[in-house]
Length: 201
Image (cartoon, rainbow, N blue to C red; front, side, top):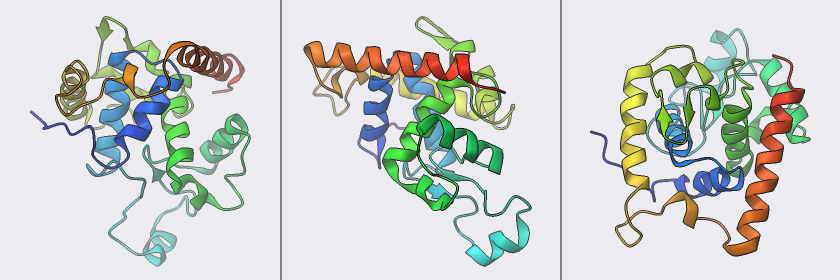
């Protein structure tokens, strides 16, 4: 089983965004597993074919410059424009903006919950007490590597249930507490709901 380190890279930043948008433990686990896989196990925003040059990407990727970036590898001009609309932030004048961690985390979490990438939302497959982690891959990329990512999600779910002080942090302990946490969760849930009812997929 994959050894989980909740301090790896930008994991805590992603956890804070999962808190903000009121994801349950199972949804948080799958978001983290997706980021872990798509970033080549770094939990840092990466570029598609990061080991190759920008010139190679320009010469070989038919969707250049709208190649995969960030924690979830946002790809294709339409998806950049869609994320730009939802985030109300310019992502198309300079697509590299997607490499900024906070923006990339917003795209990862809101995009998966809102079904931005494929029309399938994470809640279609994963909710509190129910997790079809294999089918959840359809939220991002069909069935590509679905079983491998599902195993990683199981490992993250187990890690997120460990008590504080065991080298991990549960998603419920990453953001503000008390009334501030309630307000943050409510605002996040409203944002995700708005994304779903206003999206055109």
